[in-house]
Image (cartoon, rainbow, N blue to C red; front, side, top):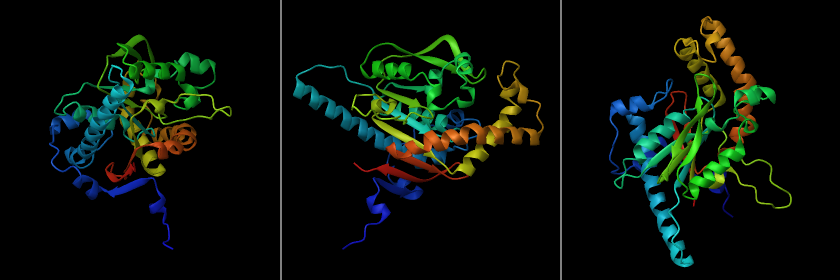
Length: 317
């Protein structure tokens, strides 16, 4: 009898960087070097080659997936005899703090918006659905900020339900990384996009299943496709500390910054402070809540210490 290996049994097909890049085929590069530079986050090392090798291939795959979903939607319309509004295609982007979710989400938005049919592509982050700091402080959750319990989950689910139902416009709260808080009475409007990208730490989280089988919606129930950005713990910590050191001499110097008190730390004090925050909060959240959702993603991008994607795992159909 043929021996079954772990790879044979995996729900994923894994590609080396070179093998994945070859799947780009003739997909044209639609971003300039300057545009890629503007899209990347402060500490990322994203360059034009990374976009060509990794994200153009992903854009080509998503183009095929979205087209197939639209055909399936039309087939269901014919079967039901309805004329429902076409639902937006929703893509989730998940992963740890400092792994590069924001950069990935912005690059995908830029590439997808330049498809030949020029779809309307919107992007929101789940940061806006965090409870305000006043609520987190009252509930003793400031040290759990970014954990599943720190989000207004009913509001996020209602937002996604309204988007998926084609309601217009739908509003999402805005989060300020300067004040480290939800901005009162400010919103971003999402108005029937063709594609919506939802980026956040815990967007693939499920929670405890009910014993009585009662329907409980999860954020990922609204996703048509999901991407998980992965990296080893020590690599993520190094990136987080590097980002903290950069912010100490930039954004933290603004007196309005929530973290202004860290702007005058020495190098060693800053490293120690960042390491403490990472170990006490972000690493715990990563192990308890984020990594366990990795296997729920449709695509896993594994990054190395250089910030470059080293291999890609695509869920089998």
